[in-house]
Each structure stands twice: as C-alpha cells, then as structure tokens.
Figure 1 (cartoon, one colour):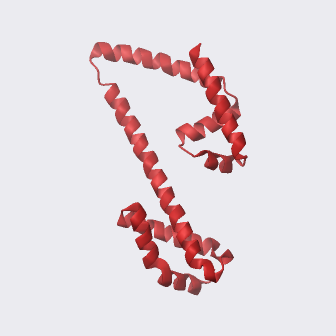
Figure 2 (cartoon, rainbow, N blue to C red):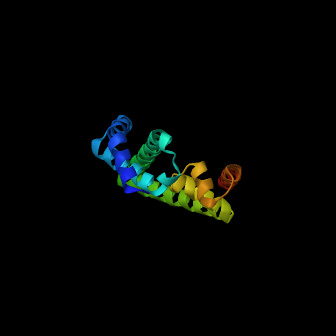
Figure 3 (cartoon, rainbow, N blue to C red):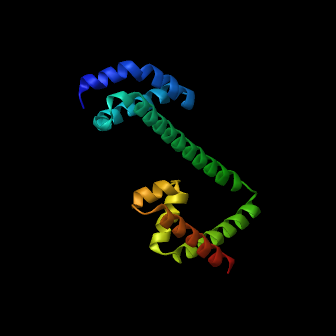
Length: 167
C-alpha cells in the first residue's frame, strides 16, 4: 500500500474515526488502540478499497475493531465473575466446605464422564463455545464449516450431555 495514500487517509479521517471509536468504547487509550488497528488493517488490505469508498470502509473496519475490543472485555469480565463466584462459593464453614467439595468433585466427575461420551467434533464445538467464548459464526469460520453444521453439533452435544447427566 502506498504510504502517501495511508498518510492522506489518516489525515483526512483519523479525527472523525477517533471520535466515533470513543463514542463506542468510552475510553481514550482503548479508542486510540482501535484506531491504530484500523489503520494497520488499512495498510494490509487497503489496496482492494476504491478511493471513493475509503471513508466508509475505514468506519466499517473501526466498528469491527471496537466490537472485538468489547467482546474481549466482556469475556474477561465473565471470567472474573466466574472466579469470584467460585471463590465466594467455597467460603463456607468447615462442614459445609467438606460437603461442598465432595459434591463439587462428584458433579465434576459426572460432567467429565458426560463430556467423554461426545464425539471429537462435538467436544471441539462445545469447548470453543463455552470455554473460549466464541460465537457460532466465529467457530464456523475457524473450523471452516457451514454455520448449520456447527449449530447441529452443538445441539446434539447438549442433548447428549443432558441425557448422560440425567442418568
């Protein structure tokens, strides 16, 4: 990509893009990072963009970068909440703690056994959805599968897990 074209695009659109990103992300440093990521993407893929549609393309990429930041932040928050809940739920008196630990170990063993009943394809989809926090569309893209296949695998896996855990 021609550096002069990137420089011109930056001079023409960076202020508006930064304002737009700030309205979405509500944090100056995060908005600046997303702006830099936007122009990095422009340097990598901007050759395919028509000059007349550069502004619209940049705003679309900026929006995608902002949504990625928000998704990652939400996942971090959910993980912190899970950890806090686990820590809080283990703070019982000694009798309750021993009972809770036993129940937790038994439940964990049942879930592990139930997961063992899944096919490798189902395990992969379940792990990517629940553990990694990916959306079904993202899983489909990563595995290079149709979205319907990913949804079917997840539905089948959940049904199989329900059946195994109800035994």
